[in-house]
Image: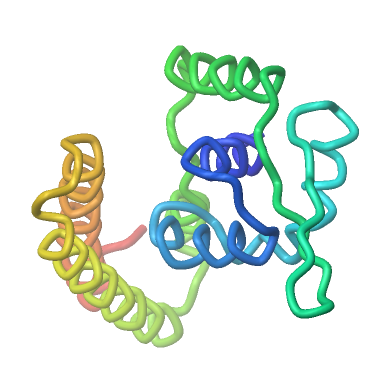
Length: 175
């Protein structure tokens, strides 16, 4: 569902090639979503075309064929339906880390501590990326600024939690 929403949203911005859609998702939405799960963009594009949500038009340049994908009126309706569904959702975000935390007493602290350090380093990279994006997008629409701020707060909260968890695990207070 989220992949469909993202693709429709990208095409709502402007018609694009499959390659451009994938690059946009990786570059602009990568930190906000699980873009590593997008192996091939062309299979979902084909399925969405079969559903009538998008259309592709052939464009020839220098003897090369390129397909430009466009959102259809049916795709527009589906885009808004998916947005409404997510906005109305009563689900909380699922975080895989929560499952590991539940089973933390069964893990060896010598093994866990390096993973916590790695996670903290990763979150620091994400924070720096978000701050760089925030600087780049100073004149961006309010929704993008709010999205960046939201994720900066989430990253800050996760870093603080992990620092506290690190101390607890290090002092063997997990039981």
